[in-house]
Amino acid sequence: MLFQLRSKRFAYLAASIALTFVVSACAGGGTDTSTEAPEGETAEAPAEGGGDLSGSIAIDGSSTVFPVSEAMAEEFMAANPGTQVTVGTSGTGGGFEKFCNGETQVSNASRIIEADEIAACEEAGIEFIEIPIAQDALTVVVNPENDWAECMTIEQLSTMWAPEAQDTVTNWNQVDPSFPDAPLALYGPGTDSGTFDYFTDVVNGEEGASRGDYTSSEDDNVIVQGVVGDPNAIGYFGYAFFEANSDSLKAVQIDGGEGCVSPSVETVLDGSYTPFSRPLFIYVSAAALEEPHVRGFVDFYLDAANASLVEEVGYVPLGDELTPLVQARVENGTTGSAFADAPEEASIPEILAQ
Image 1: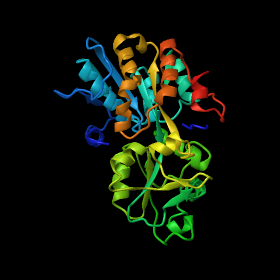
Image 2 (image 1 turned 90 degrees about the vertical axis):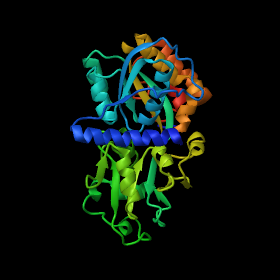
Image 3 (image 1 turned 60 degrees about the vertical axis):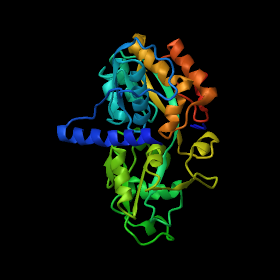
C-alpha cells in the first residue's frame, strides 16, 4: 500500500519498558505494565478528559505503539484520577490474541489486523473499530563505527534477511563486495511483532519470511543494546526507539528505488521514505467503547490537543487531514478493518474515506 503519509518523557518510557521486561522475565509470564498517574504532573496541553470518569482499561500488543499508548494513559489518568489503564507489550500478534479472547479492550498494533485474527474475533463475538493513531518510519540501525552501510537497498536487505540466507550469508561482504570481510550480527523483533511482519513482507516479499538465526526480542531495548555493543551489528525497529537512542546508534538510509533517504518526520510526511513508512493503530472493542471511560480515553487519544504526545515519543501525528476521518469512524461506530481489504494503490485518506 502507498502509506504516504524525545525527550524526558521518552527516556522515562524506555526505562519503563526495560523494567517491565525484567519483571516479566523474573515472573516467567507475559508483560503487563500498570501505569499510575504521577503525583503533581499533568499534560503539557491536555484535552479535557472529563475528570469524573472511572473504570479500568487493559491494553496490550505492539512494543512500537507502546510509547504512544503509555503517554496517553499517563496523561488521561492524570486528568481522570478514577481511571486505571494498564499497557502490556506482548507484540502485535500476542496483543490480538488477548484482544480476541476478550482479555483487553484495546490492542496496540504496528500492522493491519490479519484474516485469521479477524476470524478469531468474529468467532468470539468481538466487533472492533480500527483506529490509525500515528505514522512511523521503520528504521534500520547500525553501530556508529559502521562506516560502510550508509545506504542500503531493499535487495541488499533481502540478501541479508531472506530465509535462504540462514547459515549462508554470515559476512558483510556477502551482502555487497564493497563491504568489509566482517561477521554479520543480526538483531530484530520476534515473530509476534507487527514490525517483524511489516519488515519481512516489504523486504522478502512474504510476511513472516525471514532467516531464523538472529537475535530476536519483543523488547526493542534488547535490539538497541545488541547493536550498540557490536560494531558489526545491524537491527531494525520503529523510529521512536532510534530517536531515543540516536546518540549511540546510526540510522541507515534506505534506497527504495528513488535514491537514498533517511528516516525522519519530514520524509514520512512528504512520502519519500518508502517503503518503510507505515501507519500505527489501536483496535478498540466496539462493546467496550460504549463504556464512558473507554470512550473518553479514545477521544483523548485522538484529540488534536494531545498530538504533541505522539511527537514527543518520536512518531508523526495524523494531522489535520486524517484526524477528522479517524474521529468519524469512532463517532459512527464503524466496525471492521478498512485497511485489510484496501487496494494496493490506496492512500490512507482514500482508505479512511470509505
